Image (cartoon, rainbow, N blue to C red; front, side):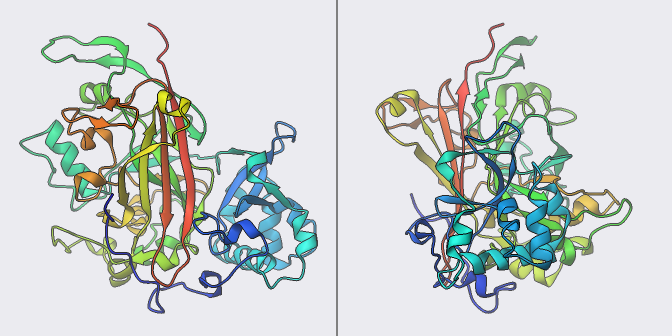
Length: 453
């Protein structure tokens, strides 16, 4: 599969770089130094976990390091942390990251820098910190936060154009797209952590040539390659967040797969947009990569249409020069037959968030420009992140051009849309010259048959 784009260089001109981004830094946790690991010491993403042997409600915050997870409440009890770092670790005793998110950027940075020092190969406290480590393989994970509100955006002009051609061939890209970061309100109750199965939904569809709808199982089940942006500190009701301060309110980013029932969507989406075609399930990866960890992978904002006359509240030199993030994303399928043969998921597309038309900061600024108050743990979905080429499609409906061109799997089968018992695996990572490779882990789910009707 060809590379999506040239990566942004990690140089002194990139804002936010500090010693925690040093690509030569290593950890005394040996697995953090292995080539290709998602979780080197330069990453340190956060999530909610518990050991498999723990009681059902014994959730706590942890930080991924190599194949281990660092228990934050246990670390707080060692006496090795002080000040804001200690306060942040103590906030990790909750069953969600919301209390930690609410503390704000100074506390997040203090914790990151303190943990970096404790896990560094140069640290002299290995024995004390070792007691706070748990194997990730021996842990279970929960959603990173209690999401009070979830807004799904539509930031990829390539996806919007491709979908528009299928749904509105004569008018694929509506005129407001290049002026307004489009979004709709998602469903929080059906957010689920990676590893949770997704059941094929039932609903109304309008068969080709029919004049009345039928009720039954979705026949055009699809994935959507997205990112989830977690709000950290919120804003007061009535107080917009300025574009160049927007990322101060962002805690971090995870992988997001917004499952979509395309046949249900086609029948229901006018005039108010998606409803039952989206709210039956949305999968999130367990690890949240902080904005500080993503600093080396910033990139200029891309606008293939050459349009740069955004309204003033959505425009700044800083956002244009470094508002994009080169987060690479891939997604694929492991059929039931493939898994029985021990085969891994076959990756079908690869894209990058740097192709998005709207940035993280623009999403936050637009969401709050009317005075809407965001709160710790709120989530903004990026929308499907397709690139400019078909191999970079973020959804099967694009990759198969509406189901007309099936994709081939290694077991000899073909797919236009997802079949029952397909396992879908999404991965994310960042790499750039002069920077360590970091990853997001994976977002995985298996499709269960619909409930019989």
